[in-house]
Image (cartoon, rainbow, N blue to C red; front, side, top):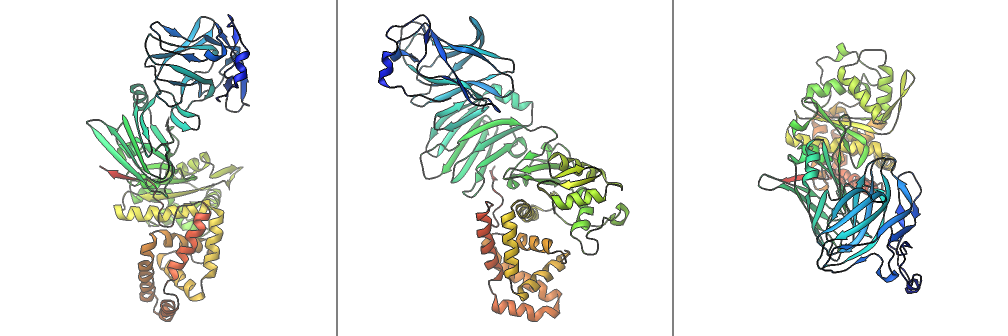
Length: 548
């Protein structure tokens, strides 16, 4: 929908209102997904003088606009389309009626007053609907209306601010909007629908530190913090919120006069699909909201090709990933798939990460042998997510990676592990960052590299794999924020000295010649990460619940 300005000369087009007149103020805009945008001419009955088109003023009687008829009715073929009307009005009892034919109402909705703002109100249309025309009306009283546009467009199912004003469908009412603060209320009808499905609120937030507060009066409140360098799209669900919200309050510490929330969209998550959630929210996700009591599967909205598993116990996690760990990362077994009996009872890692290429190789080689039930489920999820692709009797890599942590880890360890694993996801997903990591590794002198190789060997990694080594190098650096890197270097050097006495002189040379070795590498990689569009080093948890 567009708003058109009309030159004063247009007042001469119609000198006298006709019974059926061409409407000059704007055309009816049709914007359907997959189709070219088009305009449909409008006609009004009875016709109005040009200077009165699209206006309602105060009156002591019932007030109605003319009927605006499309020169050619428009049929709605697909899901997710809405009729939209653009207007400015301070009338409290405004009504919109859509017609599917002459004197055949299709739907009637009440439109809210807008004050001095421009609203674009949507009425959802079901497939098979036919839009013939529309009319607005109001009872006697004060107040006025200025019609600005009309058309068909994708349903927002929530609200959205854009240069043309506020677009909403009535499911969420924006009750207040001022610079840096927005309040809204979820309608009863929307809450009833949310109660019956696995709901999702998707907020788009402008730059700045933000706080999102959801509440159900007299029962529950939940607040979430989004830092300036956090994601601008925030997904919230029952598992992170804990109750069905009624009210929303978003505040942003920003420079500018825009709204604190640019949009809010309500949708549902299909039962078989991973749940979009920031890693910071996965940490505190409510276990009763898991769809499977043994494991829940998420997708990272910031890197939508990265899946994140959270498992109830280490043993459940092992049934998914134990053999992958020995196949991809363990010295002595890398490149071969041990039998289920060979790894029975053996422990691999507390957390996991695997790229598409290694996942495809594993499931190709394991195709003839038995899989655990969890490995079979993992394979199907990877195929459904496009991370691997069936290629005859084998599998080819798609795009993406899978990460995993467990609820058996302590809270502090879970935060460390998901940060560590998330940076593996970043490494897999951003080619420019991978290249920078390789360059940073190559820039280390031999002593520095020898310390890292000893440290990774001590941790149980296959240090003969250069890809794995570079990946772990960056992830161990970024598993803490910058202020903690120097301490991490001191602890690492001491562990290498204790475990490998033969490297004592190497450690001493690093301490003397490269006292800021880890910090220098962190800074170089942090700059590369920012250039590649990733999060800052150590700051991958973009949304955190703060209260209660």
